[in-house]
Length: 415
Image (tube, rainbow, N blue to C red; front, side, top):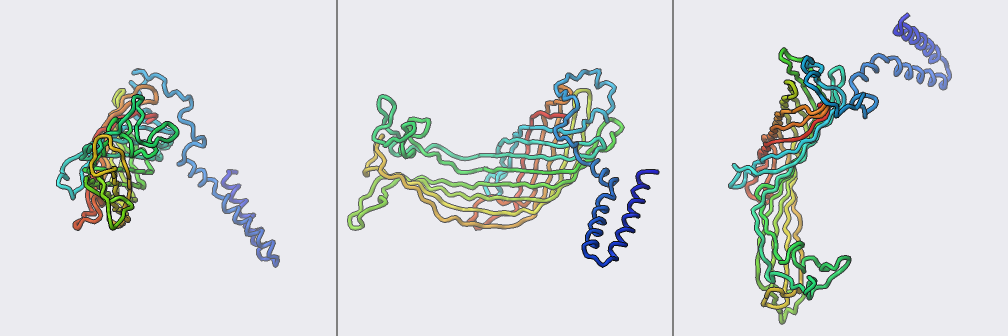
């Protein structure tokens, strides 16, 4: 008798016993009978449980390959007559890539047609089962920092040092004898005093996390293999708008006699900053196509996503005022006051619909049995749903486009 027939017979016996117990007057017996029925219901589907295990990774998550031969040489004779299905690896896989991408500027600037270079990295992790079902996870972190700036010399130019290079007329503190107030001394690493004036042109930080379910189809006639995917994706695009202004003039000290005010020479740096975050979460579909040619492997990937974009903007102004001892300032003049201040933060929020696509094209060279070096091209285009720029602008575009495109280079394991 088969295992299935034995299970059905046992189930019938338990059902009849449960029915007779439920009809009895004792609540305790009735509860025991119901518990037995639930336990049997959970254990009556071993076939379905075994079927679900076929789509999960190995019980040992550290198993990449039985012999761990990651660095085993791969000879041309090993792959000469190997079928495409055999060259497509199974088990755990991973990759790490450096990204050098160019990013579009905010559309509310006069130079929105220009691109600025930034860099970041991309990490892929996943698992492919022997039955051609798998899972994958991809994380990207990318930044671009394009400022229009210069170094503005301070009024006193520098702090006078003695023969041993120790600042004079400045209170020093532990542990290394540096100025107790860092702003009173020379800029760190320099023998002069200046303030870096930086106006943002294209400053952004992009993060992306995606989790996908993948399938591997049978090879095509010429050896190419297609892997469809479907998954969820979270992205964050943060933009920084910054403007700085420098003024030198006569200022009142923090405490003064209103009947006989005494002005001091000083300088003030005003910084206006607006930080926008776009948190996007939604779904995506796509595919990965790859083909082996001797030691080379070409791959192309496409993902199309749509998401809800939850936007927020924080605008704030800050000031730094440096006052000297008199109305005249000469090189090396001591500092009387250094004052920091900031205004209240103003917030704004919005919600938009975002959609776009992610394209990757790579060429890999097989170094060993499981290690490949690869380089390629990637383009992430969020076609709409991005808010960039200053919060208090009268004309705000909260439905902008963000395009990032460039080159990648990295290493892959068991891919």
